[in-house]
Image (cartoon, rainbow, N blue to C red; front, side):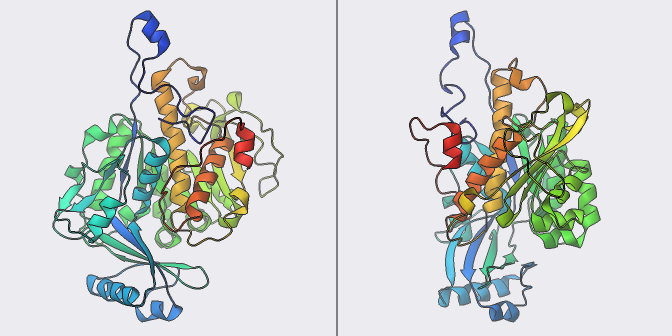
Length: 435
């Protein structure tokens, strides 16, 4: 597994070689195996630039997320295709995007649970999904279904607002018995989205999701929830607050979803409120940047070397060099926050913001998985004197997530097509992140 970000060395250790100290002692080194598990609605993203009147004709709420029937989906696709409004078609799904990005960044395995069309033909949604997913994402556990997977139309109007139209196909047909317990045994995280619990009555996906959460929590595997869109949360904010409190360790959201969940329009205050429900919060806030919030123990807090920042919580980043710990593992818990402005002010031209939050979450996942990997390899390291959730400080995780998000914003597709640029010889850590 690679280091989180691009540091001076590509790997923690020579992954394929025996540890020299164990080799000298004549014993085998402990094996550090880990992976990330995710459940998703398998679908293909279809990105298009459209006029406002098209949204009205198809009964789509601007800025919202609407489930449409198959007939309307076919008509919409045909019109977009004939008018040449489609920018790209790409494998999508918020969890699928995150796992793909994670495997590309970490050069490590991830396991996707969901459904896939039993019959795959050239040019179909299933074909596009498989051909645009990293080979490091294990698809062996996908449940076969008789029918198409989903299609998600991301319709971008001239003002930059994104409107989603979703044709679900068979994407919500994952059954609980298709969630194998064995995949959680060595997992470093389970990733789910709010969309999984928002299905039509009778769909088995919510039950399958709850089974996965139960299996993960039995094994103390962190559960990570990405909120989807503000409309999903705004429908039942109290339900989601209760759900997060009972089942979730990490929440990933943007500022609009944060407001729907907590009632706070300020991203920092929303993070503070969300910490009352969970252990760690990742909040992307568009041009404002990116926030990370968590708990640490007063005894292991570390003060920042960067300027203290103003905000709704004065000097909120004072302890951003700390590493997060679950509240119950702290003797004297302390809320800590980190923030970073958009990398280089953001790309000069943003084609679409679709997938930027998924990229940031992939970076956080990489750091969490690296922590588990290192703990398995070097259990007596001082890095693991406490049951920390990440390998790096919150400040460093912010920088990494920010950099990965930039790469997605600078391209058209919602998934990374390559890793981060390699470090130049002799370039130190500060210079790399600042350039």
